[in-house]
Structure formats: structure tokens, C-alpha cells
Image 1 (cartoon, rainbow, N blue to C red):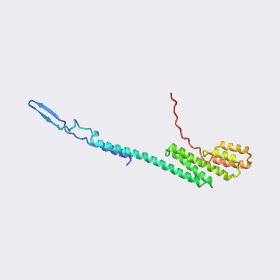
Image 2 (cartoon, rainbow, N blue to C red):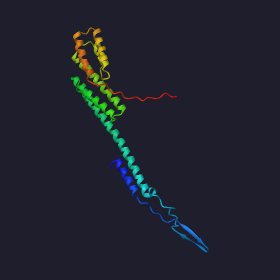
Image 3 (cartoon, helix red, strand yellow):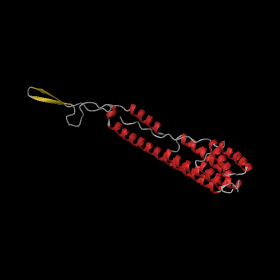
Image 4 (cartoon, helix red, strand yellow):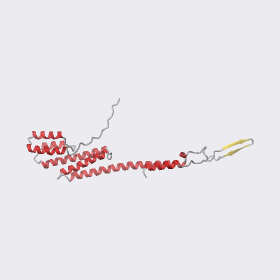
Length: 228
């Protein structure tokens, strides 16, 4: 039974509880030569009938309902944390595997990691992964993408100047490459006298990275108003 159904059942039960009847209170009637006592004078009778919500049965149900609702809330919180940890562990395992098996075929590994990163962003937007977990795992996937990108360049352009390779590595540190990054790399390659045909092929290939993935959403940071 869900928490909502449990609460409704308790409310219905309380509504139909009959009031608890109590004995007539003690009264003493005096007359010349004596007195007469009427009602329950044993001291156990209440002064008047209790309302239904103050009866012993109602109070017991209140206690049971409170315990049930508290238990349901605790279980919901525990299950949510467990599911988030499970999701995080699955993402980490898939990212590690994609990187480990793709060093000889980096392009395929990058594609797999980009898909994982997109799914990670979607899970975070739907609050299935909290901010701290999202930032840590997003950083890890971006690092894997950057490493595979550099391996890919080294395999495709084995004679490329090491300074250009170093600049590419720096540009893709966040897992992305912008058009401005490519222009900067082209300028460096020209200054280092990289052959024109190599520069052309390199530029053409790097442009495919720009359209391969989207800029990741920025996690909003808390803004504190200045003290007055």
C-alpha cells in the first residue's frame, strides 16, 4: 500500500469511529436528614463524553499512522539514494570500459563516451543524479574523451609537430572543441611550418569534432546577496 492510500484509509476509519460513551457523572442531592448520590461516584467516570478524535482507539490509530508514514518516508529516501548510487556506479563502469577497450580504435570510443555523457546530462536534468555526482562523472568522461582525441590525432597524423599535438590536447581538455580552438591550432601549425596539405587535412578533421557534440549545460551555482 502506498503512503497516499494508507493515509486515506486512516482518515476513513477515523471518520466512522463512533463516539465512546461514558458513564453519567456523580451528583449528590442533599435533603433534610440525609443525601442521595446519583451516577457513577467511583471516580473513574469522565466529566463528559469524549469526542471521537480523543478516544483511546483514535489515539492508537494516530500512533500507528504516524509510524507508518515515517517509515514510508524513510524508505523512500533510502531507496532514492540507493538508486542514485547504482546509476552512478553503472556510468563509471561503462565509461571505464569504453576507454579501456578503445585505445586502438579511439574514434569508436569517443562516440561511446559522447553518448554516455549525453545520457548523464539528461539524468541530471531530471534530478536522477545530484550536482556533486554529475560534476565528478562529467569531468571523468571529458578526460577520457580528451585522451582518446589525442590518441586519434597521433594515429592519423604520426608526423605532426609535437607542439601542435600539445595545443590540441589543451584545447580538448573539457571534452569539446570550438571553432576558435581550431583557428588557434591552424595559426600555430602555420607558424611551425607544418606542410599545407597536412594543415588542410588536420583542420578538416578537427571540424568534425565541433559538430560531434553539444556544449554541456552549466550547473547553476548559488548566488548570495551582499549583506546590508
